[in-house]
Length: 273
Image (tube, rainbow, N blue to C red; front, top):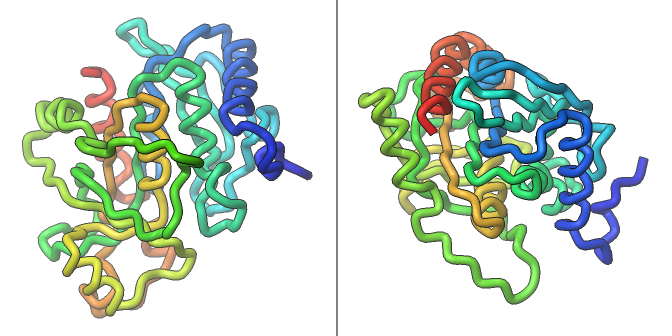
C-alpha cells in the first residue's frame, strides 16, 4: 500500500499534522506533552508510566508503517501520566535501513511535535565500545555522530545542534540514578552490523555506542523545537570489542533480561519531567 510520504511533492509536516489530528480525535487528548520512542529493551516502560487512554494501530495513521523489526510493536499509545500530563508512545518505528528514505524515519517525531510534545525521549539498543559497560547497561546519550550520510532536514534550513541531547534532561535522569554513565552514539546505516574496523574508526572519532537509529530522529526533533533525551541500552559489546559474533537474538536476549530494570528507570525519569 502506498504511503503519502513517498510523494516528494507532499509536505511531510502536513502529513504529521494529519496524523496528530487523528491521534487527538481517537484519544480525546488535545495535546500531548512528552513523546517516547521505545527501542530494544525499553518497551515495558509504556506500561509503567501511567494509564493508557488509547492504543492506535499504525495503519490507522497517515505516514506510519508497521514495524518490520522483531521485538518492536506497531502501535501508538496515548497515556495519561499521574501528574496530569499526557505522553505519546511511538511504537511504529521505521529504520533508515528499511529503504523508505528519511521522511518515514522521522515521521513519528514530527507527529509527536504536531501533537504538542515539547520533550522527545529516544531509546535504543546499541553496541557498546566501552568494555566497562556490561550487556544490559543503560547509558545516557550526550551527543551523536550521524554516519548515515543524510539528514531529515530539507532545503536551506540551518538548525543548531548544540546541546542536542539536553543537559537539563540528562541532569534530571541522573537525579533518578546517579550511576548513569553517558557517551556519544554513532548511527550507522545498517542493517548489517559494523565491522571491527568500523568500530575502531568509531572509537577513534569519539563514539562510545554504535547503532542504527536515533540520530536522524533527534535532528528532526530539534528542528521541530523539542528537547531531546536519549538513552541507549548497551545490549552487547560491539564487533571486535567482543570476540563473539553478533546477532539480533543476542540483542533481544539482553534487552529482555534488562527490560524490567531499565523500564522502571525510564518510568521514574518520566515522572520527574
